[in-house]
Image 1 (cartoon, rainbow, N blue to C red):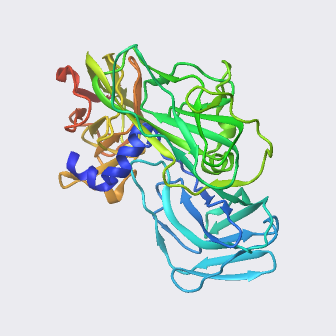
Image 2: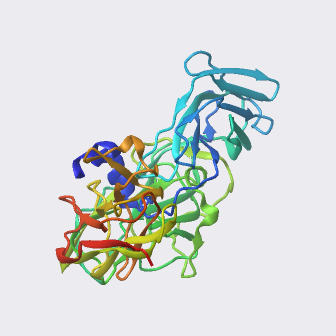
Length: 478
């Protein structure tokens, strides 16, 4: 069963999401009963005289939706900077037409929704367009609004800033070698950035993202922090002169949690961006600012402070492919994880009764359970419901077992008596990942008890005590 879901995810994509903590489908609650359509824009800047890609992605949040008809995406271009135009291609899956300040694209096809264990929404499709800016277009920031509709699914909107921007070249210093560190200890890095272009860079941002349990040792006041991906986003109000190299004035430290499982191979990755790049790539408003000292840049490895910012807000985007870095981190020692299945006992006296089952997976320690970068889930939970029952509501990330195998094309759908659930989540010691099922009694009485059993992939955390990997699911007549 482990092999099936690796192909479903795509190993590289799954590994990246797992390590970042972005995968959250498995521990989510029961599926929503209200159809919800969403649209999200990306591609939010273009350089004068050039073109750039623009993409609108459409998703739905109700797993019962397996097909979408009548999909339409409209772009309101009234607030775009002057000199910016959007192409309206014909053919393929979309037919587009422009009328004054609105571009409307219609998909005539019936679209199959793609559901996957690593996201809580179903992918409907995307609209790809090209944005161009005249050579004479002035640097400026406006906005673009997308409106999506589909038959029976209502209306969704997304409004994002859109800029005509100047291109710059940010080059990261050489990535440091692998770091070895024990639980509770701190590793430090003092990253550098070089302005490799001919334009002065007006303001620069540093972002890092680390495995869970590799936590910032200091939370600087000019940085924002996103706990969902263990990310740090720092802004420096400095000019970077062409050809000059700048360095963090003090090393940035990351402390390994005292209960991190070991041995463990993880990573801190990151890179340098312009402030505009960072705002376009991340939703910063939801992140928390630090309250510690200010992190600053100096010229060279120990020179004078970097020049003060002179043209705040100037739209710039980084064009270099050498602006990123990564630090492989080995957590040494030995600290194991014991994951235990959580069963349930409930009363279901007669046919037609609906019963909620609070199943789950609990971390009994002594180490926190964190995902590796292999693409394997924390665990597979195979849920066999009691005889005489069928699921009426299932957690996200669960596929029904049909003819002895999980059917991933039926992911998240109720109506079956056995499921395989993939947990892509991290658990603190003592924490529980819930797997809430609701079942209906289909016969005159409930038969044999069911069970929840945990299985583990080759790269998942090794389970310290297999005796608690199975727990019963019992329904009684009251």
